[in-house]
Length: 332
Ligand code: ATP
Image 1 (cartoon, rainbow, N blue to C red):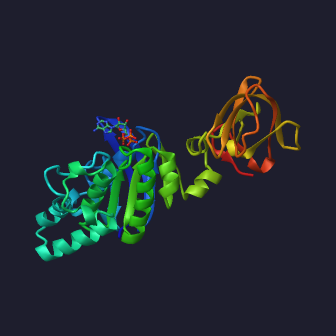
Image 2 (cartoon, helix red, strand yellow):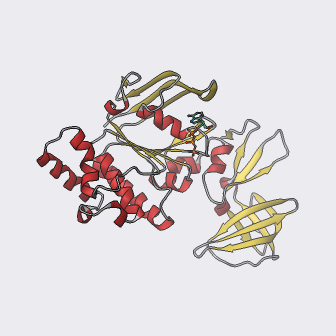
Image 3 (cartoon, protein in one colour):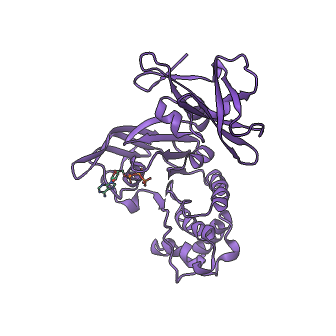
C-alpha cells in the first residue's frame, strides 16, 4: 500500500501550462476518483504518478519517497487503460502470467498467483480460453488480472470501463469496489463520468482546467459543493441556477429539491410556470418548468403532470444554495 503526494507540481507541454502548482495527497489504501471534463488534466496526473510523463517542476512522492528519478517499472504501480492491452494469441492464463515470467517468478508460484487472481476477478473457468472468445467485460477483467498479479501497491486506471456497454459498466463498477476491498491497495481511477465517480469513490478529486475544484467524499461533494462548477458538474439533471439580481449573487437548487403542485404552497422560493417538457424514466419523471424567460428542471418520483399544464414550483429555504460573484458557495 502507498500514499501519493503531488507537491507544487507543474506540467507543461510545449510551454503550454496544463497543470500549475498543484498540491494533492491521495490517501493510502483509498479508492480515489479523479473526475472532470475532457482535457482538464486527469490523464496527465495519472501518467505523472506512473512515471510515463514526468512533471515539469515540483515533486511526486509515492509512500513518502520522491519518485522523480525512478523508472515507471520500478514504482510499484500498475496501470489499466481504456483500450486494455491483452495479447490476442495468448490464452487468459498466459496473458495473466506474462509479467510474472518476465520477472522470473517460478512456475509453482506463478500457477498459485494466477489461480488466486483469476478467482478474484471471476475468470477461473476461462483460463484456457483465447481473448477472442471472451466478452468485452471478461477481456477487461483479464487486463485487470494482469495488472493485479504483480501485486502493485498503487493501481492506476484510466477510464477502464468506457468501452463497455451500460449494463456491464454497472456490473464492473461493483466488481471494482469488491476488488478494492479484497486487495486493500491504493486505487486511482480516472473518469469524466460523474456517476462512476459518485458510485465508486472513497474520495472524489474534481478537476477543471488543471485545477482541483474540490476534494471530498461523494456525499460531501453532492451536499456541500464548494463552488458553482462543482455544483453543476455533479448531479443529473444538473443543479438549477438563477440570478438574484444583487451583486452577482446566484441561487441554485437541485432538480429533486423542488416541489410541483397545482396550488401554491408555503415555500421560501416560489414561482408560477408551465410544464414545457416531460420525460418519464420509470421510477421518476423529469419536468422542465418554464417561468417567463427562465426554465428549471424538476425531478419527481410521481408522474402527475402533463405538458402545457400551469404549475407552482416551490423550494424550501434549506434546499437553496447561494453562490457569490466569485462563484464560491456562500455558507449560511
Ligand atoms: P480526457 O477526459 O479527454 O481524457 P483529461 O482530463 O484526461 O481528458 P489530459 O489528457 O490530461 O486530459 O490533457 C490535459 C491537457 O493537456 C489537454 O489540453 C491536452 O490537449 C494536453 N495534452 C495532453 N497530452 C499532451 C501532449 N503529449 N502534448 C501536448 N498536449 C498534451
